[in-house]
Image (cartoon, rainbow, N blue to C red; front, side, top):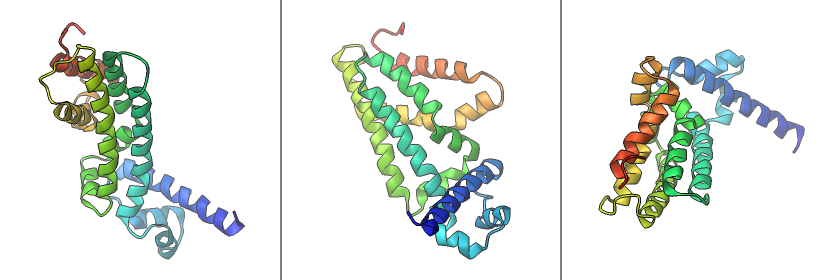
Length: 200
């Protein structure tokens, strides 16, 4: 890598890190590209050499987080353990992922990102997450611990809803329960709906 390319990459990372902090402070909707150029004291033209729009910049922030979350879910789904243990691990991993934490700090404005030109890429990753969930749910049915009559597709999408930060924000951020209690209640509530043995 040439010195010019190295300089470009360092500035690229600095822009992303700065933008992430600003979004956490202000939210997606209030965030402007000029916030980054002002903070870093760089020309707007230089900033637009890296990212053509606010949406492209934020996409480059959230995509790696979603990818990492998906990788973690795949690892859990492929573990040599029982389905109920996997469900518990999937829920914890989802709620403690950097993707969830980022969306939590900038929702509800982040929903707009899924309406932009990169939405198809984000949907592909969501579909990969759903595949992981379906794999574990199918395993649970084979182990005869999950109800057969509940659709795998439906149950997987219900599990994906856990990454919606609304309820977490209302309960945990408003100090009505702890993060750990939220994970415990979410896991028990989810398993109560699908487990044949509801004492899990």
